[in-house]
Image (tube, rainbow, N blue to C red; front, top):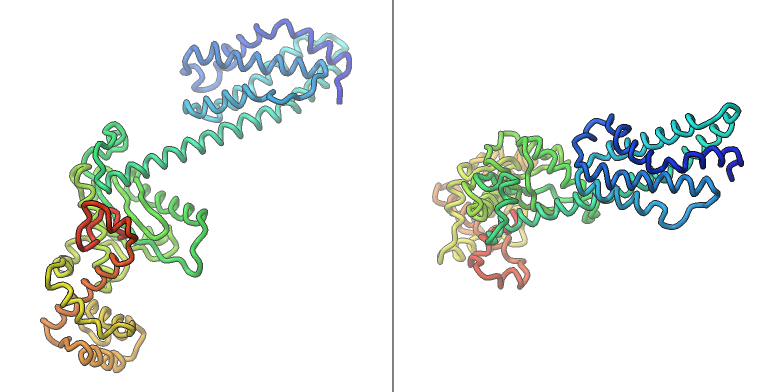
Length: 420
């Protein structure tokens, strides 16, 4: 709706004061905003003043009857993106626009003569209606720019984490120092709960990983770098803090399912690949040994870790359990029996079976494999075979690009990015 002649006349009497108003707003008016005084002088005197002048002239043009044009908000958007990149808080940016609107209204009020009350009311309505689009453009652009910058920063951090785990040379020392990764680091290997049903949508995966990162950062009180997907991966914790007991349970609450994790310490960035391999192996061994999902350490699985190392005897030991192929109930029973220290009743409780059923299965395992599970040597041999078979299974489905990667260990279990 066009303005009345009286309203246009009142507004245009202030047009000659545009430059004066811009200087006043970018100086005294905005100086009352907390943090504004600390901004660089060239930002206040040049960029902010120019943006104010643009807003005032846009207002005067629309008062004359000029409607909105393509590009009216271009300068506002440009400045909003610039302020976002510079780290200026959004609330400070929006307050400059709000105070600028108030300063213009005050100028119109002071210019109004007796009898122009209706014209002033009309201009006030016009001013506030036009500010809606300006504030919307500024906030939208600022938030889009911040989201893009945050995504870029997260990707940089993931790239740095992957580089450290891979042992890539020439990592950015400044970036390492900024993130506290130039010294000791705790490396966590994580195995996340499997999805029920179809694979989760990417947005669900990202939400889950954000919750996990929040839980880790709350746990350790510092920024944590993640190299994770929906299945698992690694986390790097600066300063090498010792994970507290119960960590797996707290992460499980964040993820909505059981989480297996293992910790290893690296004294320097160069030791991260070895620590990542060790933590991944500890998780694999703990799973193969039938241990429940929890926080695992190398000290918890020392014997199993040693038994799972490969040499020329490994294929023969692993083949001892070949007769159990296609009989997962027997393999699960063997695994549970070893974990419960050969306690048939505890094994039955763990599997939801009758103890006699456990006895029958154990007898069948001994018959098929020739392993005497009642002897210390037999139980050790069975445990070693389980560990070696799981190790071979974990490394079997690698794509050719992984098998051909230079420097990969023959067993396939030693690559720093192997799945924990």
